Length: 215
Image (cartoon, rainbow, N blue to C red):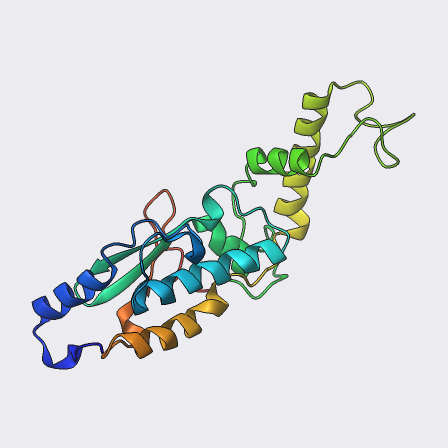
């Protein structure tokens, strides 16, 4: 049975909490892959990770790379969730520049989406740009390009379309699982509250994008 966090000192509560999850390490791993016996906290966290990755997979998004990498850190009485900022953009969506298509705090401003991930998506889909009913044959914009050049050209076109017209539609793969994570944690850690869980995901400039407000 979990101890009573509300009656313990701040330092002892933090130590108690840390002892329960100090064996977790990186949580970009399925719950079935843990090699040790799961306690309550570990099981809840593993289930949360599984649910997020399942949602990403069901949305047709590759679960390889950083988008599905989540980690947790204990600090005082809080459990912090860290992850790739792109996960938030996929989850909530991103509006194109100058347009409000989706109910999201994120919007393109002065930079287009990077073409690297788009090129990988084209390759993963195994799209043959020179010999298919849409891009091949006479009049194809890629007819005279080699395959790599054709992929790069299409990636730039897709990036421009996302930036100026379509944005990124919300996929709802991450935030919807946080309420159940909080409720499940309450069952295994006495005194755990919504305020005990901090989801902070920052961009490369150190800005908190998880809690960004809509303009």
